[in-house]
Image (cartoon, rainbow, N blue to C red):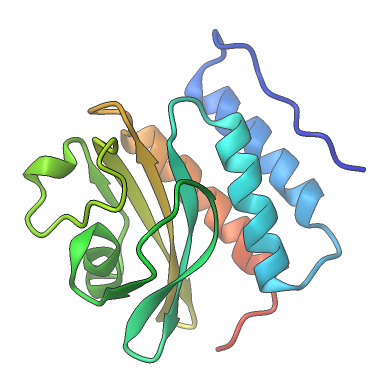
Length: 165
């Protein structure tokens, strides 16, 4: 049985993400199912990363994002490409760090407690197949170290999971 190992609050972000990447790789090892892996990944992130109120996935279904596995309060089920932070990340094919969601044009408030957000697109063969979405009740929660760390986690997920091309 896998057991997540949180680091002390004094750990650096670099150490936190290195540990999280190692734990995620071990958790997903030998399991190719994309939904099972997304469920475990969102649970691990929610358990290990501090100051989150939502961690989860949206997957492309046709021309829109549809809610996937997550941890946190209930969420918006469908998001159009180009709409909100998740839709903008799909449109740009790039990660987006939002220090204050209230300042982001078209932000979708699924949880009114969210104040900052980080969205990392899942890109396979040059095509966005979904996004990892993290929300925090604290402004300025995410920075470039978080973006880089989460992009590494997404790569581990993509390599472990059998996903449509």
